[in-house]
Length: 170
Image (cartoon, rainbow, N blue to C red; front, side):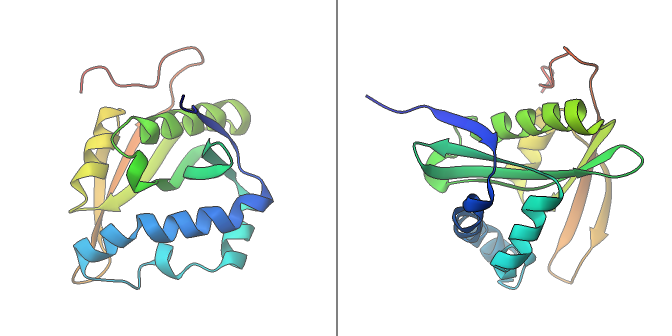
């Protein structure tokens, strides 16, 4: 009856679908903060293509459709910065965001030697904060970007190989 969602590395040909999905997904964030000039809504296709070539980008597919994506890059100290976790609104609240996050963490630790993970979200983005806490992230700081937007930074240490990434105490 239904298709299952698969998660894999993004291909260069996915850039346009990822950008369209990103635009759709960040509408609610822009509305929440009253700012439609946020970077995910102004990013160009060329900028996204450059990102695809510079780090680890995963996509979730339902058939041929990209219904989710997440990006990460590891710096020289082993800190993986995770960005752009998006899930199509019709697919949200079914665990896909957590699956994408776990798959990216596993790949960044295995292939890129990540020692810790860092991500950021808006202070008022309760759904995002709840998801990240559920996956073991802890608040490490805040940054006032503008009068309307304060970002919360969250981090967690990478787990040894074979240990589950899901925080069961949430």
